[in-house]
Structures are given as structure tokens and as C-alpha cells.
Length: 190
Image (cartoon, rainbow, N blue to C red; front, side, top):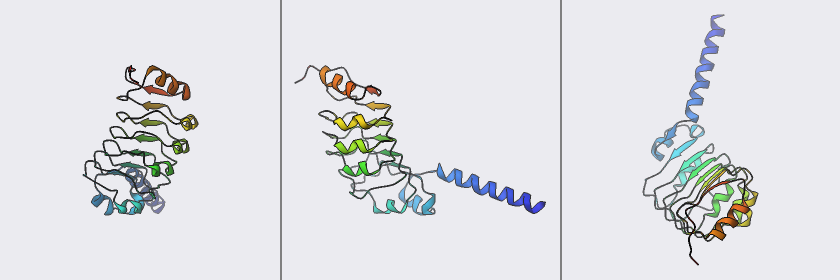
């Protein structure tokens, strides 16, 4: 009986430890590399003055959340693909083009791209069928692609700080009427 109780407590402790690891946010690449690679689910590389994504992140096959905000990134590697990535934050970087690699991460639910210099969103955005939150505020966007209408799980779209006319805002609202959209006051611009 004592053996059964001991095995129960050990297995419970291991399960709790595994649960805790899944929610641990690693605050640096160095810290994450000291952990077993299968236990890194969340990684925060924000404010690191990165100009490129470190190749070491590909070791973390179970990555579910990646924060690359507040760096100096202008692109993402073409092969940046994680099967379980749910949250990606690349806000406050130097992107001028929407990185097509993002569209390969089809498990994404939350995508944060605010405060970059992105002018257009590619059609491949429609591949992100699980996307629920899309923040792309303060980018000089010229509109949204028709493929946004495929994003049936999208619930929130932040387009604040982008100068859209009333007609453009209406077109976007009609394209994805089920989505809560944040707009600034429409401009009278041409």
C-alpha cells in the first residue's frame, strides 16, 4: 500500500512539474537553452536589439508562444515554422513587408504586428484559420486582402492609427462583419 501511495505522489509531482513548465516564460535564449528542449513552450526575446531571429529557437519544437517585439527585425526566416505556435508578437520592429513565413504557422491564434511599416497583407493570411486576435495597428496599410474573409475564428482586429476613409472602413467591416474592429476616426484623405 505504501508503494502505491508513493508512486501516486511521485506521478502527481511529475505531472504538476510538467504543467508548470508549460506555462514558464523563458526570458532569454540562454535561459531556454539550459532547459530540456521539449519543455520550452514560451520564449520572450523582446527588447533584445535583434536584427535577425536566432537559429537556436528551432530546437524548441513545442514552442507555443514567441515574443520578438521591440527589436530591430526587418524579416523573418522563410523556414520559420512551428506546428504548435499559438501566439506570435513581432510588434515594434522594422518590418516593411508582412513576412510570408508567418502564414506557415497555421496554429496561430494571436498575432501582434503593431507599430511596423507594413503596407500590405498577403493573401496567405487566409491560411491562418485558427486566428482569433490580429493586432496590426499603426502600420501604413492600404487595405485588407479578400482572403481575410476565410478567417471565421477571428474575433478582434486592431487597425487603430491607420488612415482609412469611411468607404474603406465600410468595405473592411463588410468583408469580416463578425469581427470586432478597432478603427480611428475616418479620414477625409485621398
